Image 1 (tube, helix red, strand yellow):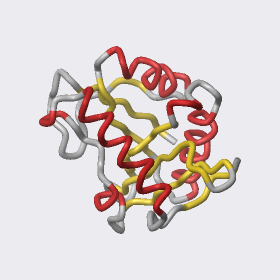
Image 2: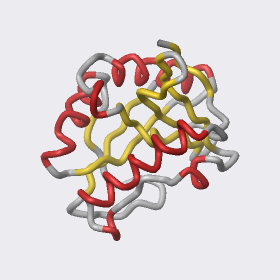
Image 3: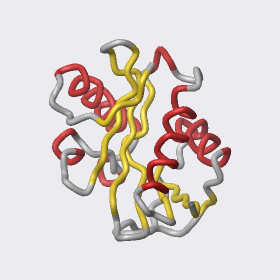
Image 4: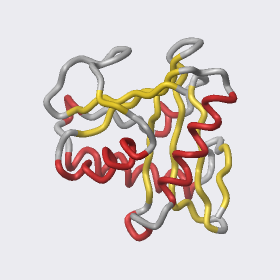
Length: 151
């Protein structure tokens, strides 16, 4: 497996992200869905990584620049068939290291508050993220949980 910066032009990653957005829409009310579609992930302030097994995407994650010192973790996903296999930990470790290399001193995220997202929240806790108030343009939302950590 390898982690690569992805320009989001391949059909494999497009399908992978479409599945992600569909799943988030099925779990989270539309007004609380913050998952970016492929066009949203192509914005210049976002760096996107794919985890590839050969040519097949098995995971992804992104970093969105909020300001010179603060970035947001976006689009973390592992394919259903590979959940709990270490892909998310490997990718999160990579993104945290890259965020530090890019000069960020804080990394924050929004994830769901539903039980479906409990494994994700536990993963973020394991990597030193603490619960926090909404950041950037987020507001209090019973369907969202906000976490942050210093780098």
